[in-house]
Image (cartoon, rainbow, N blue to C red; front, side, top):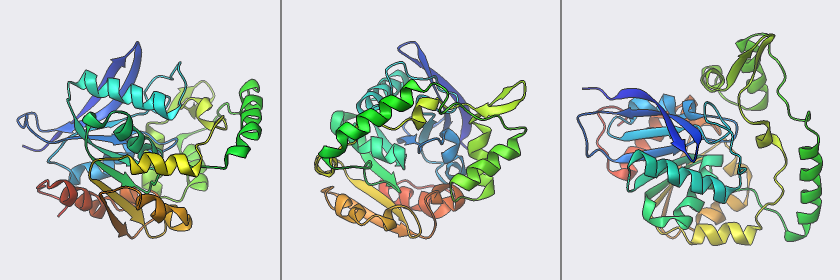
Length: 290
């Protein structure tokens, strides 16, 4: 029997965390895989990989404030997101799982490993080596900028698109990805209004963060990851343009790095080799994906 797709909507402290689940209901002992998407993406980010990951009980979530998940009253600090994700996993009835994170999701995932190590069986990062960092002396300026933006209620409100294609075109201007990949993201990221369509994500996600970690803090977290880790790097992605990326990955004590052709969204544009790397890393035996 082929795995089936299900729609998920789990209540966590009175708020909904939504997602997509792929599993074979007859395989109760299938390895559990939690997928965390990138900034302003959603669970559809992992749909192209799903046909090549049939061996798992796979759940791809909409992070709070994205897709069909509710906004978070507690904000979007990394530690708060780790807490909400932990509560979500607990609500699924999972004791532990493998975690696969792309971009923002791959920045959250190592922190989840450190904050709650018993939850994570292995860590897989796609185009991620920890969050952006900056020197400590930049903090006052950053705090002031964030406050100005939050006080301007109209600053990041969604524009209105006449149709879905306008939103796809806007996404393609902001990120290099295949048009079909952009459409997948857009399909789960728009809400219909009287005049057309608007972004569904919480506009607070576009406000400048009030605090960045220092580079020393980022590397301290990565050094504390105690599970085996796979890092997938795109040869034309973000990590290859950031000189600190490989040095950061070297902080993880048990990390295998695989470089594949593609850009930052290679898991959507060319999903099969990314899925094959995941299957090899976890020891899964798929009937697709190599």
